[in-house]
Image (cartoon, rainbow, N blue to C red; front, side, top):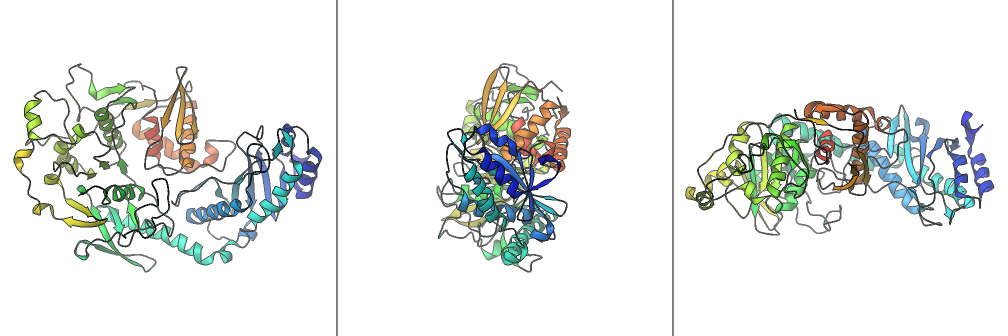
Length: 550
């Protein structure tokens, strides 16, 4: 009778008291019951199978008369998720076996993105939380479960009551930073720039594993003569470094802030929360970081512009391997990005395949039959084809003669050197300017015979009765929720047995994302975060599946 309508919270509490001390499966009595709580409607959309399993999923629909938020936009929903995460930490604690007593949502990155933890359903606000239904061993702790609903959940929901008035100033700042970000992004595109780093930005992080800004860090400030100014809709006027389209070289001594700057540029594809230090670092979303990935899978990719005429006579226009070398993996990553329309390539020589970056004149004379055409020989022609390159190079000057901008980092401060002031000995490098052509478009086929799931920072694949662990080491993917969502999207594509060219596949992924989280799962969990279609393709490109030839 519970499923016919909305029952009062008292009846749910009565049920919990009644099953106290029984076997854990007794919690199934709560499944799909809609019950009222603090003027909202709550539903357990998923009941965990035992206390050690992932926690149960509780979905709460908050009506407009309670939350009073006029526009449930992405920055507002992001702010709601952060309030929920902070509030739930007060109540979540170990109260029994396994995940018993946990209540809340996963940790959020400092980026403002759309997540399943807070969504709009018409004028209603939908909140999703994990709730570890408590047990001792596998015996229900019904009284503690009742307290989790009556006190802890009610305490969390109280933060949403009259939300705009409670958090007016902070919410306004959150939305303003978000809107300013997209204004800057539009300004970049209109002026053929690729990235902007505002003066005063705090780029270093507290630790290598922390998202928080480094205390007492030296702010990023570029010389007045090299800075650009932009007036924002909020009335704020920003000055800072603009990276123009073309070829940009970042150089400087070790530990002077080069990689920190590059990492901030790639993470600038997302808006950041106020106080992060990088809220006014903005990069066009077509930016992709490439590196050497020894051992990665390459699926039918055209790498012939970079690698050709192999002694083994392998066709590099349709190159595939399950164990790529550093140079072939990086060549594939660049080709895959450009094939997908991502026309801003970032690299760091520390993580790149050196032989794909450059070769000096002396080695060119020794190595007569060289199948690799380095990036330094191709970059000018790539720029002419509308592809921008931002790279860290401190061990070689090979790309300096081709650069449009040279940024020298010294003690975390940038200095811009006009390329015409840099004198390079022309005898150091071979006088070759290779022709670049865009890679051949592939067809990518996915089959339901492959099983896939997300596990922490990995995608776990079962293919041809073998298990593969793909570490999602992509700086464009900034939180685990994006990995979870990508796995569900790929699982859906596999179920459809799709076989599409790259452009059509990206469009199909984009269509799925725009349909919402329900398009990939009947039960929506609180741990899904939206990502760019290319980042789903990035994972597909590394799956151990060889597509049908084009």
